[in-house]
Image (cartoon, rainbow, N blue to C red; front, top):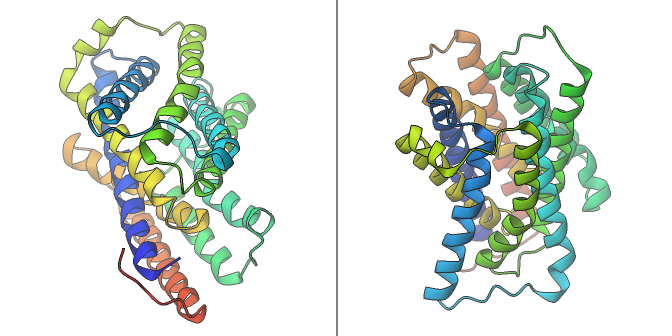
Length: 301
């Protein structure tokens, strides 16, 4: 891995996390108008599949998977479906803020399991960075730990595990074209999204999206852009580095909520955001030092 590839991967990861955070705010706005989250999830998959098919046709891009990466791609699709079904279902049993804090334990899961998956040492510095980032997320989200239901906690943690697996799996298929990856992952996610909506009784007709056309468009656009950038980033940087960078997602969501929805950020939330940024900067410096010690010579992409 070259330094230039690593740097571009970090930029892509930050862009992805930012778009995901942006997406969440508009999803909330859409819900105010009556467009359910599960319905948006289903129809955004259809949108992504249509876009991918159009890009593949116009740019003459193959949708074939690299043979050796079919296993990781299948796992990536299953993990993405698990992430969506668990996280969306958890908020039926516990407050959204609590679900978010439990869900964002995935950077810690990635750090702790990385020695087993990638055969790399677990350093005290890296463990400390992950702990600081997670603490910052807790402060930003500011959960009220009341009325907890074990089912909600289990589902939110399942979503966290699914996300960790998603990061590792995506890093294992760098040679597959990003268009093909998006297509096959979404094709695996689609039946799961439809099933969840049917079970929840929220599989509304497409006309539901017209209740908040702007918010729905921004929600789907943010997710599509974030997902593509995430796949591109995970082909360039390790899952550990990406996981810590993605802690910026709730920070961005809180800032955008304050700007668009007039929600007030408390000093504790600001301090949490500062902790997340400090953890990310520290991790970038540690990664740069590791690459320098490995005597990798940067080359132009």
